[in-house]
Image (cartoon, rainbow, N blue to C red; front, top):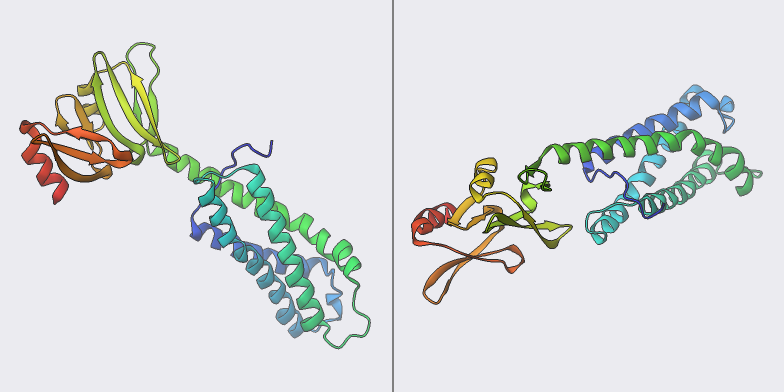
Length: 263
């Protein structure tokens, strides 16, 4: 279960929105439920201390973002349920440290009998988390699903003839297409790993469906996004692509290929 992929949105803007919503929600929660004996605060004190708790919650969330992006990068831009669990565990621990420090050093700095740590955790922090946690979880999940749908809508489809299986992927992951008798060989990236798949169709059909591809040879189409450099092999022009893929360039297309890839 923990190894199942979880919807994740890498957009920093959306995580800043979650942090802002968290700050507002914590302020409203403390104002309405008064778990910190806020009835003893004056109106002015409420609008000083309670926003600080909201700011602490947002800071705890933002404090974990570098760890989140580090894990996301190490996982080759995949996010699993386990990663989400670790993120929340670290964030809640940080939030406890921040909120406890605010209580002791800002709200009751001279109180000789403050709430004990155990009482603070069980009677204040955990009840607050039960209410606040779903807001964060739903927000992260919703943004993650939105991001996945947006990415899926950007994918291209290469269909096989008849009942033969096709391939759906993002244009940026497609490297080249090579004609192979009645098939085409698709070279593409999956989480940074080179993959190849045969599909029963014609190169001309792929060229028509994906006009962004460039023909270098009667048997090859390339994605210009993956162009690395030109080279010569036995006096013939070739194109080097991502993953060290080599594609020949025929004289028919040499001039246009050079103009398009070098400009």
